[in-house]
Length: 274
Image (cartoon, rainbow, N blue to C red; front, side, top):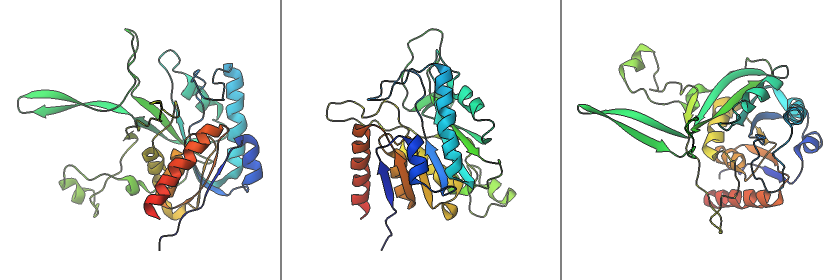
């Protein structure tokens, strides 16, 4: 019988909850996407702080994360921006520079136009989703960052866990890869889900897909992952990812409605398997 992983979801502010609900150095992987401070319309959280206050808050919860993270643990921090304010992800990263090492910079590709050769002419094929930008100054925002942070920058990864087959099979023997898999690299195409509620509205204005979190957990290495944490649970996509790969999970969310949605979506996943 498949063992069901333990999932704990709390309606709590993560700043207090991490110190009260988690033991020091007990978490293997953190996968999270905090508010971007871009005036996003959340239910209860005010996403329009002064930048200095926002960065102070970022540092506060990051310090708590560092306490509960194992020395060989990984943080996968998803951050986005908007055309008129592209600095947010970089300013957050700079704020955390003395707490963590930036071990890898991953680009979550939400939509991409791929030029393919078709006989004697090239054609562009667009895959994925994006929110169009109505401007003659800015480009459509088709990617976000997924920063891989560690304490010392020396965490070994299971790169083949999210590997892709070689297109040119001659490279299998050339690179002595017996399993026909190469590392995926730092560009991950993962389309986001078009989830809607009964009123045909998205239940959360800014969430990453479970597939993105699942890839992050696998990359860290399932053989050394017992507990995954998301301090900003939202509608539970990181919890769903942890459940899918069979590892224990703890998540904190301040908004009751988002938490109810997370529990409902996780319950759907559990009923499919058990």
